[in-house]
Each structure stands twice: as C-alpha cells, then as structure tokens.
Length: 159
Image (cartoon, rainbow, N blue to C red):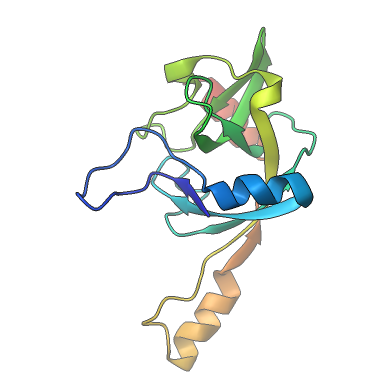
C-alpha cells in the first residue's frame, strides 16, 4: 500500500500522494491498516519507504499525523499533520515546508475527509543491511510510535 509521492515508470513524480485500492478495501473491515510512505512531504517525521500502522476512524486533534482524502481529488489519500481546527474543517500541513501539497494549497479539509490517525511507523530492513552491526542498528531505530507533537504543530501553524 502506497502513501506519498510515487514515481511512475517515466521518472515523473505525480503532484499528490496516493494510497492503493487494497488499503481502501481493508479499511472497511479492520480498525487498523498498513501503508507505505513515498515522497518527502513529512520529512523528518516520516521518510520515504517508512511503513505506517493507521487506526481508521480514530479521534484526531492538533499535532496528530493523519491519513486523509485530498479535498479536490478524493481518489487520492495523503498523510499530513493536523495543525489546527478552522471554520470548515482541519488545517493540515506537511512537516517538510518545501514539499507543499497541504492546506496552504487547498485550504481546510472537511472533518469527513480525515480517515485515520497514524499510530506507528517502522523502517524495513534494507537488502544491504546484512552484517550483525547493521541489523542491531536497524532494530534500535526501525520502529517508533508516531506521537502528537504539539511543538511541531505550533511551529507549522506559524508558517
């Protein structure tokens, strides 16, 4: 399942991230699902290739990292951080100010388009990480919860 910017076979990068149809089917059945991050919009919190555990339908608040439908292209799902509630919905921003594709481009996101809260991220073991030292380093830093970061929320709101 993909979430984020995905390069197609021509090497071009689409404007907005997307999530696969498998995620859409699984969301209706289970309260938790998985997704893979592609693209730079949530760096440094999320890196390209990170895997996410998403809690569908969870209550959200400012500072939370969420999966939502793009307001203008609802077949696209994106991952952003909720900055604040405004008239008409949530103001969402990426942690990477230079990547774009957030509420500064499309305005507030209605409540019903926010689908779930990202609870956990892990980085998969790369093929070249085979030495015992590399595996230990991977184990030490590969899995982390994605927590609400109020300081990041305030910082993002000031942009």
